[in-house]
Amino acid sequence: MPVPLDQALAEVRELLLAPGLTRAVAAGRRRGHTPSVTRAQVRPVTLKSGTKLQIVTDDGARPFTRNVAPGDEAAAALDELLAEPFGNWHVETDSATIQVRITKKGDAQVHRAATTAARPAPEQGHDRTKQWLLDPGDPLFEVIGGNAAKRRQIDAFLRALAATLPEQLPEPLRVVDLGCGNAYLTFAAYRYLAARGAQVQVVGVDVREDQRVRNTAVAERLGCAEQVTFVAGTIEDAELPFAPDLVLALHACDTATDQALARAVRWEARWVLAAPCCHHDIAAQLKNAKTPFPYGETTRHAILRERFADVLTDSLRAGLLRLNGYRVDVVEFVDSAHTPRNLLLRARRTGAAPTPEQQAEYDEMTGQWGVTPALATMLVS
Image 1 (cartoon, one colour):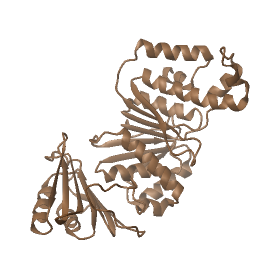
Image 2 (tube, rainbow, N blue to C red; image 1 turned 135 degrees about the vertical axis):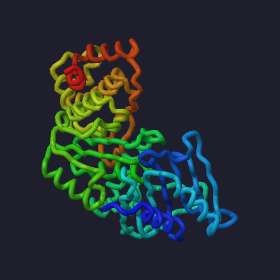
Image 3 (cartoon, rainbow, N blue to C red; image 1 turned 45 degrees about the vertical axis):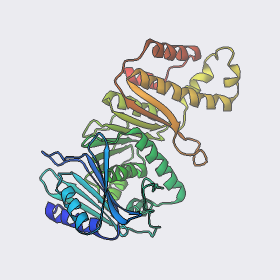
Image 4 (cartoon, rainbow, N blue to C red; image 1 turned 90 degrees about the vertical axis):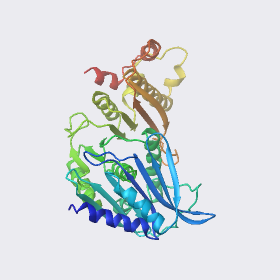
């Protein structure tokens, strides 16, 4: 339920000045207003001169850092920051996490979550490094479970996401997760992006109605049901309330990954993260096609044909994305000890037309191997 903005900011101010502060981030902008800086971060640091409150602001060109003394100096600096018309505040303390989002009407939506697991106090200093992009004490892990393997996978995914997105995010940032399953990566993406101060709208798509019901209940428990919603439908046909900026497709089986990539291209999504799962389509085509000389050994044995089909499939997917105006990186998603399906296609839309060399390379590859990628068929249908 919305609360008066003054009341919400007074609570934020109290937390920022309290001894238990871990860090806080302010970002975004209120409707009709523009802050003098694009983002601000506040955290305590220990310097040779004693404990200070560090305030880092970014005007879009470069960051500016100042360390203020506790007491009147810190209070005055924070009052200036709280007067800025930011659209979101995210505050973490040793006992709670508070998220404040300013609505279009000028009220505040406040979500509070208690810290549920004791953890070591973060190091304080100029060279402090953050071990996890999503704190292991985040309420998400209380809801979905937080074993070490799942935390590693989530952290690897978030690091890939962080490497894909720019520092300055669009407002709002619209995200769709196609084939979201039980949605723990969907929620992780939301929690991470919201912690960066972004105003995020997320829709998860899965063909199963029971998953939609289950995931909606999780969103309600996490207090983000307005920002994270779910629909039941196929990747190709599900109706969404917006055209997304960011498309996720994580471990969608076989040509479901192609369906997600094709839809992302049609949306002209700015960023795409796709982690393919099984690869059957090209493998079946290789089995029935004549292998070009001198590569017979790559397809003569079933296990080698299967592995080569994986590589060829994702190479052609990357090539097709480039032909459709994307810059593509193919990277490791998560350590292979966690899952053998650890490849990630990371794409950013540039809108650049393909070069003749790129088109010729793709044509030569498909022609030599006698295959037609499912993605190519979907993009022309």
